[in-house]
Amino acid sequence: MSVIESIHIAPSAKATLVAVSEAVAVAGEGLRGDRYAMGVGTFSNWPKDHELTLIEAEVIDRLASEHELRLAPGETRRNITTRGVRLNDLVGRSFHLGSEVICTGTRLCEPCAHLEVVTGRQGLCRLMIGRGGLRARILVGGVIRAGDGVALQ
Image (cartoon, rainbow, N blue to C red; front, side):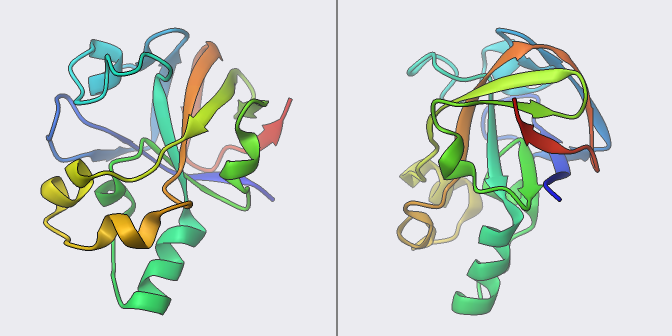
């Protein structure tokens, strides 16, 4: 089963992401209270092709087992951590988060130097190439909760 394992938001660029049990996804904006929704995230305006980001819990698990690099889900700087879904396969496809929210994957969320600066983890970008997550637009808003399903539309 594909699920939302955790949800994280940050009130501003470079701020520590905070885990929340649920969030309101607003079409064309992002998760209420998050930097992308408020337009103050480091990548909020470049390019304007996403309102939220996702990462696979399995990637975080592999970084720990293969490289002894332990990251909490929020340290990845992604809003939603999923389990049981290959996010790379969702580029150009619509999918549900929970029962209300519909998103479309716009492009891979490749890691960049900003991630290493904010986390203080040198070499992290190299380890995450091709598995850094997904950028997505919110087409239909609603409430999403940790534990909700993730499914193709």
